Amino acid sequence: MSILSIRPNQNRPTQSRGGPPASDPLVDARGLTVAMGGRPVLNRVELTVHAREIVTLIGPNGAGKTTLVRAVLGLVRPTAGEVRRMRDLRIGYMPQRLNIDATLPLTVRRFLGLWRPVTRARMDAALAEAGVAHLADSPVQAISGGELQRVLLARALLSEPHLLVLDEPDQGVDVHGQAELFDRIEDLRRSHGCGVLLVSHDLHTVMARTDKVVCLNGHVCCSGHPEDVSRHPEYHALFGRHAGQLAVYLHHHDHTHTTDGHVVPGVSGDCCDHEH
Amino acid sequence: MDDFILRALVAGCGIAALAGPMGSFVVWRRMAYFGDTLAHSALLGVTLGFLLGVDPTIGVMAVCVVLALVLVALHHRHTLASDTVLGILSHSALSLGLVAVAFLETLRVDLIGYLFGDILSVTYDDLLRIYAGGAVALMLLVLLWRRLLAVTVDEDLARVEGMPVVALRLAFMLLIALVIAVAMKIVGILLITSLLIIPAAAARRFARTPEQMAVLAAVLGMMAVAGGILASLRWDLPGGPSVVVAAFALFLASNLVPVQRT
Image (cartoon, chains in turn purple, green):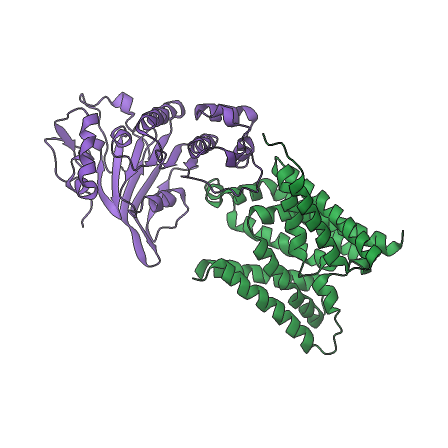
């Protein structure tokens, strides 16, 4: 059961947005609470990602975005609540960065082959898909940060994932690069049929083009279609003057979506599904 | 050639063959000080072995493994920086070993031999021990090679890919303990770490793959062993330190050789 089921309607071209099909979610976090050192980092968080759905996680620094991602990946154990994963779920994880010791002589190709036995052809295909085919024989420590991220994306694709988890893929990428990056993510969703969960700092390009935005600040402040979130008072409280610019990238809609998926006319002031 | 020289060379080369790949991992994982700490506890293991009437190799292994587990446990719950924790345990373990030796009045231990090695007094028994232990360690290393590399590159990625990260980390510590137990005789517990990291560090500039670095480190280690033993015979020098000095000379020389970087 998702927080918000998007129903096809005339205003929203569901096909291109790739709305979730009526199947079990890939991951489903319910009442997820994580405490670290006695301090609650996540408080009763709900998060659902379906196949072919792009979900963006936004929130200020210290909002628990990374912790939520780590809980979805199974790297952090919930203090309360649970994270349900689809049976035999394959996750392709792209971390923000890697810290490989300079003393380890490792080419990009060897790096890709460490995680599972992979044929050369598969590696080349994944590198090409990530746009870094020319780096196969470079040492991993010798490539730039942006190139490393693409290599990490190629690595994530090698397992033919049901779910791609991208931790701040837009970091250090300019506006033009962000648009390109998002084209790539949408291409991947189309060609691999995978769901995408991504953490982003970008409130404009990236956020506007996702199916669902989850605005996090320890708890889920609001979640839903980007446009609805962009109108939400808590979203504005969190991001202040940076929040407004989203509307530029959107069509106008005269309705909003409630937590149970109903489309109601006008703009609702509250899409929260929890009490404060 | 005298028999004892041959035994020393064979023993030293056996250990260098193991120390090359293991030392490469120690360098990649930045665990030089960790290895040093385990090595310093070896004397305690020797005395415990005598006390309990078991083989000193078993005693060394047991103490190293216990210390490794303690280190892992402390790492997770202590506020002290890990190099502080390592420093405390390293010197405490060494001193405990020295104190324990002094307590056992009936035990005549060749302290200098344990601390700095006694490569020229290697027996056939020692050879058997080195090659049996070394073969087991090398086989384990080859078996776990890809996964150990993955865990070295990034533990989180390895865990998401479903690798048993904690088990692999423990296996690696067990391998270090095994290396210490078999290498003790050659360079002594104070100098073991140098046999692990110096050849590996010298090999780095010439290697383009992890395997090249491991094999080259093993070859350089063997050269250091041979050079050290010959120098020790020629000028009547202590064996263990001579081997380490030879390794150091190779390391310095390796920095002078021009390498074409592509």
